[in-house]
Length: 146
Length: 118
Image (cartoon, rainbow over all chains, first blue to last red; front, side):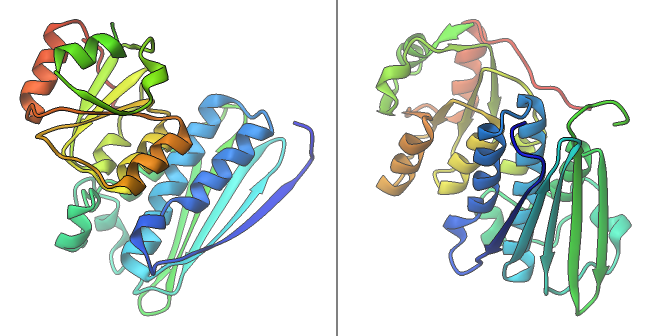
C-alpha cells in the first residue's frame, strides 16, 4: 500500500433509500485504488454495506468512519436509532424486525448481522435501547488469525 | 460455464446494458429476491437472477463483484437503475421467464456452480 493510514468519514443519509450503499461503494473504490487484496475488499464491502443498510432501515441513517492501515480495515457505523434490545436474537440468522416496505426492497431477511460476522475477523456491537447502536467491523489484511 | 451471449439466447433475454460484455464467462448462479441472502453467497463469475428491480440490486452486485444481473418475470428497471449499472460496469439482462425456469434453464445448459455457505 502506498499510504500508511487512510481515514474516511461518511454521513449515511436515510432520506432516500436508493442512495444507501454509497459509503460502502466509496470505501470499495478507495481500497481498490490502494491495491488491497481482492478478497479483503469484498469482505469489507459486503459487511459495511449490510451495516449501512441497517443504519438506513432501522435508525434513520448515521455515520461511517473507516480507518485503513497496512494491517487491517476498521469500519465503525454509528447511529442514534432505537438500539437492539436482544443482541443474541438479532444475531440469529432469519430473525428480523424489518417492515414490509424494507422487505420489498430486498432486505429484512434477518441476515444482516450474521453476514457482518461471517465476513469480518472481528465484530463488536455496542447498543443501548433508545440511544443508538455502534457496530465495529474489522477485516485483517492478512487472513491469519481470522 | 456459459458465455453471456449464450445466456441471452437461452433465456431469450434482452440486453439492457453491457453489450460489450457478451464474452464474459459465467460459472455459477444465484436466484434470489432477498439481497442479504445473495450476500451470504460467495463465489466468483456469478450471474444473479432476481425479480427485484431497485437500485439496491445493483449495489449488492457491486459489493459482491457480480458482473451480470438478469431481471426475471418481464420486470423492467427504471432508467436510474440501468444508469447505475452502466456506471459500475455491470451487465443487465431482462427475460420474461420466471425465476424458477430461468435458473433451471441456466443449470441444465451448464451453469452448475453453487455458492459457498459456511
